[in-house]
Image (cartoon, rainbow over all chains, first blue to last red; front, side, top):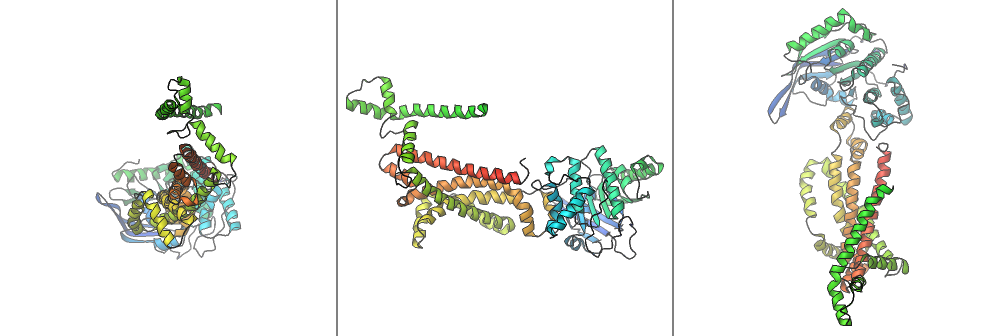
Length: 286
Length: 289
């Protein structure tokens, strides 16, 4: 991350910790708390159990990865947290609220698998989109967009249109967009899945710096074991049919870890446990 | 440039050549009669061919006859004269523009209703489709009579008929366009808990622009057709349709074809105008990809 610009805090009474000091305040509600969460989709071929009895607590400031093979419900779980799908059983709170209230209060930023930039808007206006919707005044909008583009190393690209940017740059713009209104919960659905290894490493490193500096809570869906181990404080291993939590692996590397830790025995040990968990869930990592 | 113009020129020349040949064939009977009457039945074939291309009331006028008629009725008479095609084209374009505006707005409004209320989609769509299966030639006189009953006369009845034809492509095209947004883009709006009007303004409308212009092009052409049909019904007001009707009363085929060609040129011009606006707008929305 080149320029150390921290996006301004929205004047919300959130319990998010100050930048670089991620210790959650005592008594703050969990960022995400799922109890016995289930989701059954009604399809033409009969009901499909997408999530089955998921229990998971994510504390403020954590970086939690959801890993598992296709069809294990990791994306579905993220979408339920975002209130893009509705659970059919169990309870779920997001920052102490129902998912719907949390969404209505714009409590999270969501980064999709694809950049999902609007092709008719310039990069800057794409980043400004949530601010426009939330009624942020024009001058403040411009300031935040500039800071956001700086944050993801896209300064100077604001006037370009999305198609003029590479895939990695587009995804960075979409991250700047998710951060522009400064949510303290970031939901990311395989954001780097479509990118090549080199770009992916670089963005992983940048994302980690960003998380370390801002103290945000990140829920990150991936199917890459090294990515999950490198980024996370905890890894939730999921298994398919029905989608459920198979194992939760602690990942106690320092917050300011670098890509070099991937060569350490400790890293390999954690990765091994994750791989064992995936294997025991009767599926291969795709 | 030369290579791009070549196919166009070739096609135009081929059409003209076919037209001249067809004119000889179509007018041969009349020409034979004329030569018989004049006692020159043994005329050489170049004279015969030249004769078929210069009759006063041919079945199919030759292109140069039509061009001559257009030239005379555009340049040789004052544009305010009732013999001027500029005068009549002006009347037609005025009703077309008003009809297109009414039809476009009505169609757009319908598309908004249909997209935002699924029950209206099921309830209205069959009627919208049915409205277009009624032949407009049959409907036009009734619309004129009915509107005259409520003392709506002059420009408006013609515009209403034009609107009747042009609202349909706009309604159907925009209903499709407003639903064409990428599901991911819609999800994104949901994560911001954007209101319906915001989703419409910031996502659905810009995403539907290509559909809008495609349907506006069809709509403006349909509007012109509607106006010409209305003018045949209401010929006392003038216009290209009235010109067509007068021509067919008096067997003035050259005049009919001249009015027809000017109507076609007007249509092409209107579609070109919409295309120009499209380029301008889409250029602003996406950097001219």
